Length: 446
Image (cartoon, rainbow, N blue to C red; front, side, top):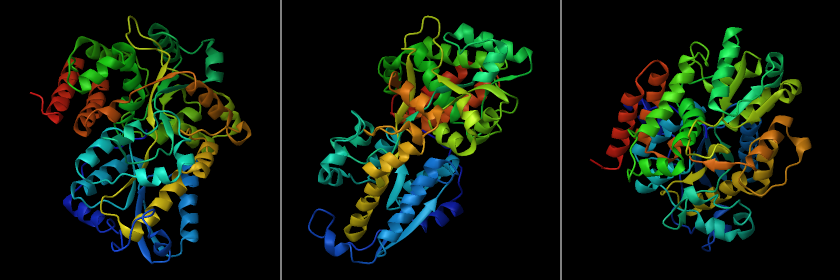
């Protein structure tokens, strides 16, 4: 789940952004499946799409190529494609959402984002499209649509699967020091001490955009401590609060490893991509990152480097209530469709959704070293050895929630910023209170 920073955009920028959106055309024809599809296919249609596939990784290139092929196959559709870098994508999307000026189609996250957009009457469901292609609909893994579904209406189809808390480690470095991947918190702390003594960075961290420590470390680490049920209760403010001792303990563990020197200096000033490069170059023994790293590494690292990377889950913690054989994660992002898109534009949008998330796209996505929540047999000759490792591991572990996939947007921002503060020496109790206050306020709880 690659996330973005807190919104800090000016009104001028918002006005500029709005001019690129809301290009849905032709409201006088019927939507696909309602009798107007064939006629609409010949009409000139304007359709806008926003995405965050701007990088040089294999997955981004695959998705961009599908969009370009769609343009060639649909000469009647004037497709306005806006590619926005991942770290700024969510902020820009929220800006146009606040003004009710969404693009026709846009990459969105399951869970809280879908819920908030539906609550703001910004989305329309795609049940009609799914029901018209039952083989496609039934090809998804169990529960794939859950976090895109509200009151029986489904608003998107996932285009990937995103475990967020994989512990990547450099086998050569581990062999050099005669150590093994940590299975317990004490073993992790011992590893940090061992590497620090020799001036080797134990864990690369790129927390400039503030989401990484939350999504990739805290979500899984806190679940180890509190268990999933506690977190969901706290998120709903029913019988648990973020000021409870177990959550403060989870924050304390994160601060403990930070104070021990696990991360390189300036970890709040480099981004996720720079972190991955640092790890791939052998400048850190470990990195805690999501499944999105697989496609980035496959595009930019040599086979030798990829073969030298091992993967595992985060270690267990003393007296933890959560299942240590687990990864935090969510089904991947999907395409949301604006409530305003109708007629011939809606027909064209349905076809583009299918092009980007249908069976052929799911297979191409998997072969670009990106996990999917769709039943596709993996051809290991088409992917890196690292991807094959993660693919196998994901099939054997439990999936637990990611914090910003469940908490309100406002509370997620407080968590992200709070963890930056925590790692710079802030008190766990103070940060826990800020998170509790933000989530309670979002739910209207006093």
